Length: 109
Length: 217
Image 1 (cartoon, rainbow over the protein chains, first blue to last red):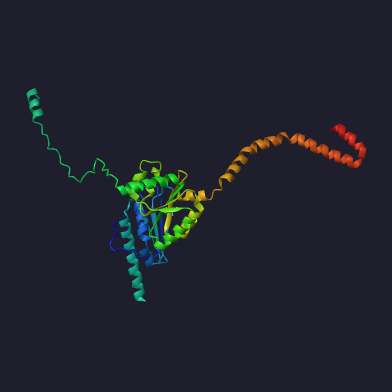
Image 2: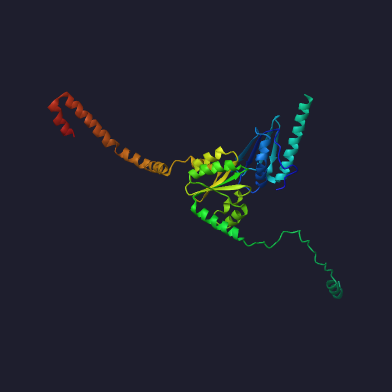
């Protein structure tokens, strides 16, 4: 599985990640891989307070990843037609943006 | 057109050269079936025995639980007779393809673990899984019935077989017992009234009441 850029996922600015999928559907592979990468030990060690919650449903709904950041922003990734690396890229770019914002705010103070 | 010209045109028609398709453009039409390696055969045999012996097979995804968590979980499950098995997904999917449990195949993607046991002890399994954060129950096959995660939870809340049978029997005989009681209501009422009458008469006047009650009965 192609990990994008950095091997670890930095979860510093994330409050909660809810991964919801229906395992009997055929389009859940990328969502499950995303869950593995986000739920790995390295990723969890970057932020112990961040919760990774997998929800297993059976209602033929599309797989969705719901990410809540510490400053209240939400990122919704609909994994039905995305690959795991694309999802990870989008997630990480937003994370790094948030990180930079937080660092800038801390530096100003 | 004159027939000769027509013939000439037909003979000299342009036949384009056959178009060469680049080798990687279309997917391979004939399926590439590789022979199974001996290890795969051993694993398939093992899988077959596992599927035949165990009544309950649960598929769980673990995102990177470390060795001590695994050991604790294995210990907990072993107490209830549930074995934890690891198989490569490819082997499992090729094994399940034509068989009975073919519909379980889409579950086996990513890092999966199999929990097998010969008795469906769902409650204990669920409590052990709830304790470990990384393991997610995807589905289970209990008594040859494919169940989703929520179905497993509701299965654990079912009462035992004897209780369910008792409920069924009582529900079925409810109507017949109701009919029987309705039929017997009149004579029962009559006998109750007569008994009451006898009591009253016997309490009023001793021997006078008794013959009259006998006549009435």
